[in-house]
Image (cartoon, rainbow, N blue to C red; front, side, top):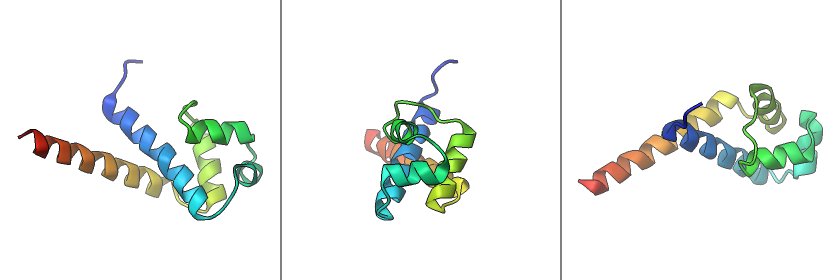
Length: 92
């Protein structure tokens, strides 16, 4: 599959937001993994962008965090588009 810079940027932002939400709640990787029914390594790989998560994995992590996946994706998309808009303005 060819790379898509927008998709890649949003994926990166989703990973960052998942980690941010976990840390904001003071929940360890082990706890999230246990609640989500995933390995600690899987959650860590998602947060570090080592592994592109499946939809099931994303749903499990967001369920464990008690946050809606749709909200995470919307926030990630908005952040990426705002950053791109700011970069385009600077180039003018």
